[in-house]
Image 1 (tube, one colour):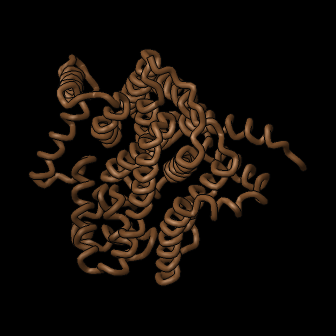
Image 2 (cartoon, helix red, strand yellow):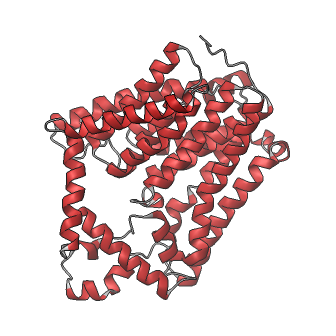
Image 3 (tube, helix red, strand yellow):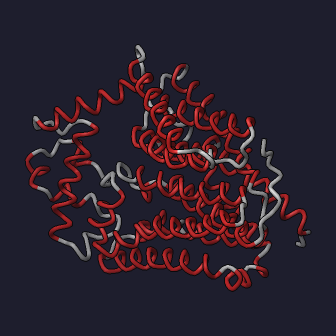
Amino acid sequence: MMFRAGKVTALTNALVLAFPILLLCVPKGAGIFLGAILLLALIVRRGLRPMFAQYRATLYPIGLAILALVLVFLGSKLYFHVPWNVMDNPSRILLLLVTCLVILKIAPDPRRLWSGITIALAMSLAIVLFQRWVLDDPRPSAWTQAIAFGNMVAALGLIGFVRPGISRKAHLLAWLDLALAGSVLIVNGTRGAWLALCITMIPLLFVRYPSMRPAKFFGAVALIAALAAGLYLAPGSPVAQRVDLVRGQWGQFQQGNTETSVGARLKLWQMAAESIHLHPWLGVGVGQFARIPQASIFCKEHGSSDVCTLEHAHNDVLEAAATMGMPGMLALLGLFLVPGVLFWRLLRVCWRNANSLGISVCASGIGVVMASLISGLTQVTMAHQANIVFYAGIIGLLLGLAAVQAKYPRADGVEKT
């Protein structure tokens, strides 16, 4: 079947717009995106090989990072003779390279992504409000695992915040995206995502307002802090409830109670650290973290504890180090740090060329990497299919768009007043 270039570009533009909507608002949306990208790769497969030579400075480092991670996972699987299903979620990281190649080849309009983000966040807010107040769901998250959903919302909110343009309309839409993301997270209740959103948006203020001076920056930070304090102090605030819950559970843990969300995580991290000390190079086997609490003295004495039923470390670095040793930890960090460095290099090129569209794309990538690292302090990226498909898809998409902008800047058509 033959496809005209214009139709392929139109399909890719539609997929870029639909990406955030699929991942946040559509059941099995991650699978739909995965299938669509593979279909596009099949359509343009004959033109993908030249991309490696044309964009080698981008594709080679990210390709090596992905290869290192896959090899460490595969090596651990073979060495410990664990079932093949442990490779299911990790194998989806290959989507990052496929997505990047497709975007490099077709070069869709980056602005479609920001249109899709606003729609997706507005739809997400409507969905979680319905689930919370009508269905009485305490952790509404559309059709995705609650923590994974919150992390995706935070990342998309940050991308929306650095949308291109310095007109009043662009600023208004940027703050609207951030407000929508924050509102969804308040209803959803994912604390790690809130932390990622609040911390990462601060350096991104310089992208939102490129001419901002230090005095205005600190004034903006103070205003954000005042807003956060207001959300905490408001009567019946869900933010205050979640923050106070952490404080209370921390105090309970210090008194020996591990049967809380915070207490279970802290106990699990202690067990993970002890296991890393015993097995620093190979870990206990990919996907086998559950062996650590089950073999611990704590679980032999407290077999009914919820800690003993957990299968993940709820921390990316500890999970990788405990199950695959130091090589696994380094390979996982490479999956975040290599794209971060690439985005930073491309950002410098776009900045020199005064390419505002490219700057927004590159800053979006840096924001996603930062938010993912922070979110990874309290969850495991590889534990949920939607989470890894989202990370692979959005990094591949943004990296491809950024590389194209750095090499072939397009007229962004963004208002400057």
